[in-house]
Length: 299
Image (cartoon, rainbow, N blue to C red; front, side, top):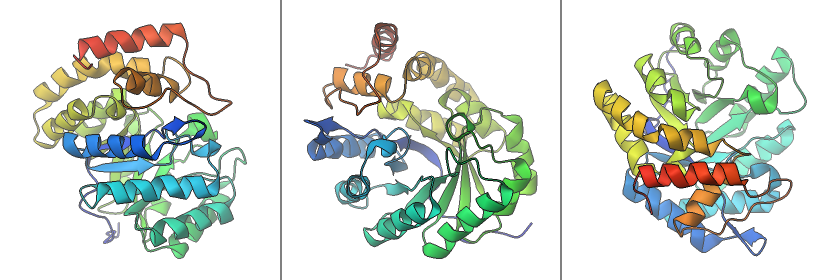
């Protein structure tokens, strides 16, 4: 396989799929800066802004770009900012990509065209158009549980040959795919877990990190886990993973990012506000979050 020379060295370790805080129905810029600063202090490698966990589907285009730009400004170069450019119309994804590049984002993350269920030719054309629209490195995001479209191993291998497609965020939950991707994708193509609970196993099989929901709440723990994996200390990584497991479960005990926002509100970092059709999480999820926070001594 050919080598992808565009792969950035920072595409590794603990990365967070950041929530978008709201206050009074609008994006809370002050809270967003608090969240970015907290991730910097925790040792997070990169922030994915305006992705699924960032409620991108409920944002206007200007809000979407505004969230990413606010993260870029708050980061001040201390960590990398990846802009979510998921859209079910390719032209909209291209527009988002062009605007992300203009405001100084370090990279992009792009889902398949959700809801439309495009075929292989359509998916290749979608990602090719993104790659031609910008020089930024692109993380291909496979999340079939949300988009209904699953990227096969052979299709990911084909996409990895495109110059700006440098990584895959795999939220399929199927660890056997990691081995196949390693064998079939371009040399240097980075594999990232999109499932917190499988992050350690994913890395053991050749992954380089995780784009995490739990890192919103426990960024230091997630960063330590990823460092342990990078150092080959899987005994320590498993110890941390066991500590984090209740939080991982809690984050999806109700519609995400409801539990994450509840946890962050408990920590005094944001208001517990979501946009319809998303609503605050129910009592069961709240109890699970409370127990997870207590177990991690987060308060």
